[in-house]
Image 1 (tube, rainbow, N blue to C red):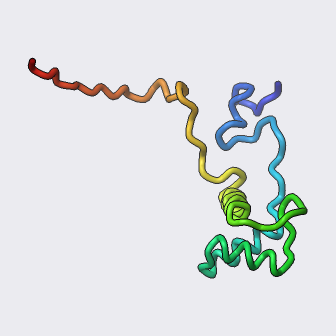
Image 2 (image 1 turned 120 degrees about the vertical axis):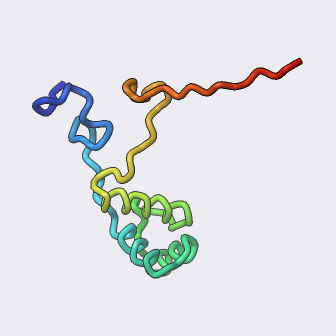
Length: 112
């Protein structure tokens, strides 16, 4: 596995680095149009209806626009505008920063 100079192999790709994996797909014309309609204050259902009426193809090239497909397209659009993947994903359990201070909670015992 190759890596960038000064970066251990396999660590650059997960959070904001250039590393192995597929390059991101380009944002579809439908996602761009959905972003314009959302900026006008339209709801997800209204955007889906407008895209279907305008015969804008879905990112997969078939089917019809639904609220959830519009939402997914808007998330992808936001991610592309933010620079590749958008907001960082939450870390999986067990991968917390070991240098972070531990939080100790004292729970008083109940008297019997």
